[in-house]
Image (cartoon, rainbow, N blue to C red):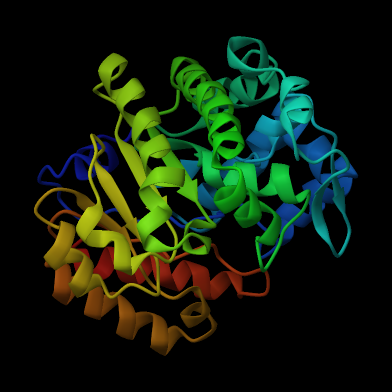
Length: 343
């Protein structure tokens, strides 16, 4: 595995500051679109270890990042818990059978039974590790329990989260039961990813900003910490990245046994450094739309280097790369990160 990337996650001295990009394999790569077309369906691509391996390696080979991220989807977890998942063109993921009451929850598979059904993910990891250069790390990931629960309860993506929030305030016991069941599956899912060969764990809470700050620990962060502490107790050599999106108001309350805090683009890096830089390595946080301009990209990369000084930092975007970003601009971002950090 990449000693430089893993050392950077633990805050150790490295010869340069490494860089990777969230949502590496995506529609911005023509090579990805070719494989996606061959698969015929997004879930088919997730379920095919050979094709998933191929698209996981594409950004490493084409763009030059320092770490590969496993190609999969966060919603394979509730899918294998027994929910009916489909991806509708132009609309995104949908569950035909959302979880709204105790009976809905009781029909879901939990624990090791659900985690063991994700064999295609573990097979993909093994294939990637066979082909990934030894100087590159492999990042595995999961959605945070709250983010997964929002899809499971709403049945699809949402801008209001009103069904989830109605449950949060009117039936918090049920929401906690859902979160607890998901958390147990995610713990074992990530453990199995580690056993299959991943070098780094990342936990995404894409919908963290949907929760008011006073409720965030209760309904999201504590479950993320529970997962991290379960993994750290058994696998202390595996770095853990936490990435809650859009919660600058929560930074004073961050706690837990993990290594890297992902800073999204809406949170000033200087502020994150002030609040968290002594305790955690920081990752991020360039606004993804800066990739449309090489000049804006260079400006941001240089500013991040000045703020962080190359210490306890991993270059990354502040959220996922967008589909119409020119590939040359993505390469420029990687090259500029390497330039300013001395590679």
